[in-house]
Structure formats: C-alpha cells, structure tokens
Image (cartoon, rainbow, N blue to C red; front, top):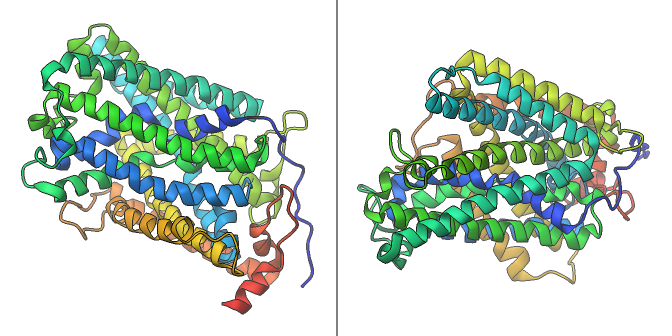
Length: 497
C-alpha cells in the first residue's frame, strides 16, 4: 500500500506548557463551579441528603476511566487524543469515527457555555436591577466568544495560563464558602450523609444513591481534556498522565467537600428540594446567609463558563488540527499561525460555529432550552467516547502480548469503567431503562437524531476515504511525537480482525 504524506502544515509549539497549565486544562474543562451550582444538585432529587455518598461513588467510577485515559496518554502523546487511542487500541476505523464524533461535540461545548454565560448573567442582573431586561442575554454570550477567540489566537501558552487563573478563582471561592457553611452548620455536621438514610422519597436506599450518582457522573465530563495538549506539553507522557488523574481526583474531592458542606448546612432530610424549581441554590444561600458574598459565587459560576469554553475550544481546535493534518478533515484546519503556532483556522471555525449556534438556537428556542439541547448532544457522544476509550485501553495493552500488561489496571479498570458509564449514557440519551430516567421532550429530544445524522455522515465519509485514500484512515493511529508512522495498521487490523 502506498504511503501518502500526512499533509500537516507544521507542528504545534513544543514544550509550551507544563503540569500546572495542563492540570487546569482538565480542571476547567469539568467546569467545577458550574457543576457544583447546577449539575450536581440535579442528583439531589434522587439521593437527597445522601448526595455526598453519590458524589463519592461517582468519583470512584470516573477514576476508573481516567486511569485508562492516563495510561493511554502516557503511551500515545498525541493531539488526536481519544481518536488516536481508539485507532491504536481497537482499529483505525474506530479511531476515525471517535475523532469525527469527538471533534463535533467539542466544537459545540463553547456555544453551550456561552449560552449559560448569557442567561446566567442576564438573569442575575434582572433579579438585582429589574430595569435590566431578563431576555437581554446575547451581548454577554458574544462578549465571551470574543474573549475565547482572542485567547485561542494568542496560542496555547496564553490560553492555558488564562484558564489556570480562572480555575484557581472559581475553586477558591467555592472552597471558602464550603468551609463557611461547615462552620455555620455546627452540630448539624454528620457523617450520616455518606450513608443511605437521607435519600429522597420514592428513591430509598442504595437505589436513590445510585440514581443520584448517575447524574453526578456527568459533572466529571471533561477530565480527559489535558490529553489534547500533549504535543504542546513538556514531558508529555509523564505530565499528561499526572494531569488527567490529578484533575479527576482533585475535583472529585472538591465536589465531595462542597456537596457535603451544602447538605449539612441546608439539612440532609430536606435536601431533596435543593436545586429544584423554586428551591434553594448556591447563589441563593450565599445571598440570604452571607450578604455580599453572593457576588463572588455569581462571578465564580460565570468564570467557570468562560474557563470551560476556553478549555473546550483548545480541545476542539487541536482535535480538528490532528485530523486535518492527515486529511480526514479539510486540510485548511491544520493551518497554524507562523509565530504563535496556534491553529488559527480552527479558532476561526470554532468562533463562527459558536456564534452561529448561540444566536441561531438561542433565538429559535430561547437560551435555556438551547443549552439543554446542546448539553444532551454533547454528553451522549462524550460518554460514548469514554466507553470506547475503556475498550481501547484493554485492546492496546492486550495487542501483541505486551509485557507491560497489568491485569487490574488494563483489564479490570476498563471493564468497571464501562459498567459505570453505561447507565450515564442511557440517562444522557433519555433511554428509560431505569425508572428514574425520563424521556426528553422536543426540542431536547432532537439530540438523538442530531447525533445519528452526524455519525451517519461520518460513516459515509469513512467509506469514501477507505475506497480512495485508505492511508489517511490508517494515519489516525499515528503519534507525531517521537514515534514513526503507523500506516500499516489499517491493513494489519483488518487482517487480524
């Protein structure tokens, strides 16, 4: 089979960032403040005052998959990240489809967060000053899009340091409030919230905790984001491995502490109502109990949306660059700034998609509904990618009888990781296998068809490339940092399959 030149227009900037910036790439991709304020409380409807236990279970579950990502990141430092892992661990065809889906949904994450930035800011300003129109959300979303575009254009060093500063702020604000809540709770502090005695009515015992943990698992999405910056990271094998595991464990413990603090302060036996429509919220508790401190909580949530959008834009542009340099996506997406080495074409496309999705969906449905639609599309694909990466970890270390195969880390952990994320996938997709999963209504129910159409288009592109340029599909398995081409993998994988 004839080998074709990769078509890359150059390399990303090597050794531009270190552990601190890469760590916060994953941390901010999980949007810790936004998750604490919005995502995690959704599990309270099931786990009630036992939500801290549900969060702890979700942390253990996510660490299993994070371990698989970290192991593969150490072996395969590539901007293609999960696409490369799937290609090497399973088959280049799978790698292409994973990259196709992952690039699509990561490009949708910035508009998702910009919508949140818009309606959160407008809603808070309207509540504080009624003269401010509650529906004037779009200027804030567009302002956020400009900030993210500038950070991306300036290069990974600037965008990563920007994300680090934002991440430190949001974590510190909520940790200070959590300590304050624990102190104010006084004698109400109790370890019983790590048991099953406070679950919500109708969801007693472990069943309620399990349901709450499924919704909490979704708050960890993004822990793998550090892997996409591997080609720009100093000592990428070691640094990315530590960043993925460190971010997952660190933010998981952050989730446990903050959830515990609010649970014991609010009251475990009535916590099932926390975060529900018309119920209490983190900003509301800060506003009523701690005076002006609510402003810092509001800023932390807004900050979290910007930081998450910035981190996800880094992932989407690097994934697009990795696929464009081997010409499975349009080659212009591999264009780099001659001095900054930032993927400027990808940044431009990301900005156009973000603005178009924000304004198009936001005005077509209204921003909260548009947010829910995009969130459902994103989480459905991302959780599916996590399941494939678990399989890829096992496949990679089993392939060729590798001497460094560790049965627990490379076989048991992937199996348990898949078991943990299948319920999350069914929940995100609204498939009512469990009694706590309810089907989505339109337009959120359009998420499934949207994903289906996009992946069908990917299959069509795949078939065309296999027929005309099979070497491009094979190159999804290539690692561009210190490793030779893997263009024979498509043929070899097909033969072995």
